[in-house]
Image (cartoon, rainbow, N blue to C red; front, side, top):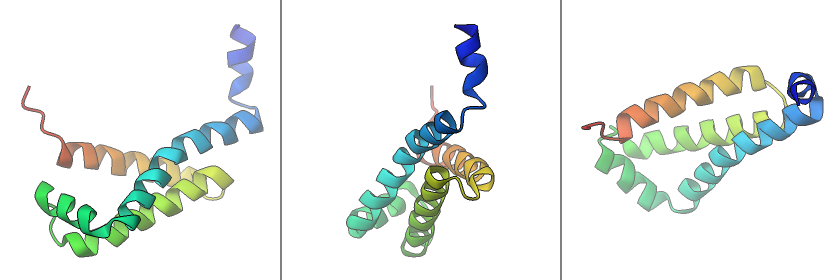
Length: 99
């Protein structure tokens, strides 16, 4: 079992599959926002994101381009930490941590 896990990090297919699985979340989110812009803008405004109509295309572009980068492996070393930072920022901005 240890050998399988040790070799996982260097297997190109495993790396691509992992990237595709992570990208699926961002691609789905981008597509749902793009297909129902009115609801997405309303959600952004409700959360308190300023300039929701301007922020929406930027968020959709980030999620789409970052997701595609993870799937095809181009600029994935930039896309991955960018999407991670976006996820942390979104979690902190959108979710209440009242306890």
